[in-house]
Image (cartoon, rainbow, N blue to C red):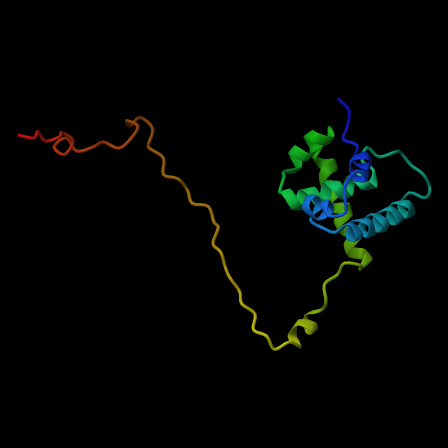
Length: 154
């Protein structure tokens, strides 16, 4: 079984499918790819070993990781590489795009200039422990004997 070829798959995508699949528009995808390829060329201008993941694969992995909430282990299984390489690819893409400054958010002062009220909604999604029966006890809840018999109709 061969590795996923993202270059062939992306060529076939229509412009409106980028938003559905990657969560960003085609223009943003292309700009991301351009920034990453320029940085990669700068980092590897002296040569080096060929990586298992190309720049396009790293970008697709990162966008898929954030879009689908897949685990790194599942992505690593698809690409037939280690989980650490997936982590390193995602980290490199994040750091490179942040350092480029092309996708930074405006400063806090810009938001403070507006007099609109900000509504904050807090959702508590903490996990609760499940009470499990003690070992050695019968499974299930014991019913009262007097309330379990059905009454006869006369």
